Image (cartoon, rainbow, N blue to C red; front, top):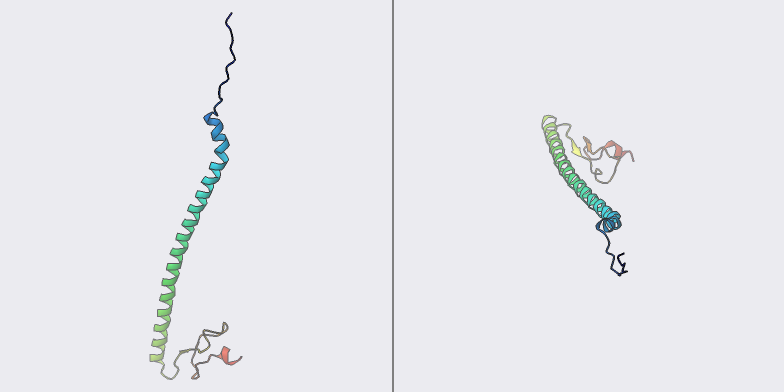
Length: 109
């Protein structure tokens, strides 16, 4: 019969045990990275939308100016001008044919 000896050895953690312990932390880190990527993509899309909105605003502004200039050239007795209260009053009609440059909405206040 063979003799048995008890020898103390250090038990090392197996690879699967260490992965299972770090698994949730790694998943959380991956989720954070995905969230950062998503936010970055959203910022890029918002920036693109802001650029498009600024271009559209400029086109509308230029079109409005051209319309007013064409109208005023064609109707010299009824010229359109911007209301003086357009920047400060939200109920303002923005434009008027009144000689005092105050629209009907602003005048009625």
